[in-house]
Length: 159
Image 1 (cartoon, rainbow, N blue to C red):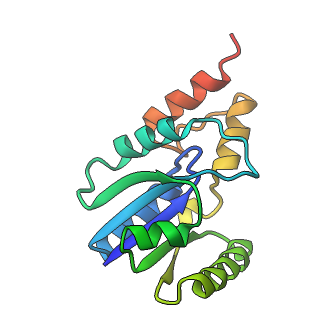
Image 2 (image 1 turned 45 degrees about the horizontal axis):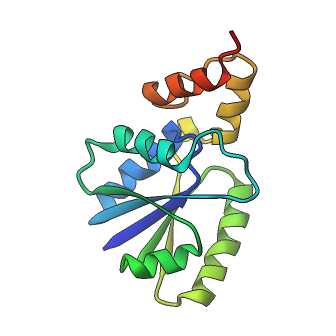
């Protein structure tokens, strides 16, 4: 069974990696899809995000990285995926994700959405939070992979 894990991943966090790692144990293949979100201004290009994710998951042999613009269900059909994988942190995530799952079901009735609750230690973590902390000079090494932290620090280096 093939699962698609879509997101902006700007940047990829340890919470994202938690979902990818656990998903890789549940599914034959997990395709992490870097997508653009028109409501967000990305810190990194899609190419940079793909590279960051590839380095982060190179030990997971059944994980593939790709990018796509358009409807996630269209991409899932193209990849012959049966599942959309989504992570949940807090109740507000569930409301938004459930609405999206219902919408996707109207577009692709054969595509299931599987929710994984993020591990407790990452329940507070978001890419937006990481960027805000870094913007004001705070440490993010404990929130993202080390190579991603270095990239973030370069973006916010004001010297």
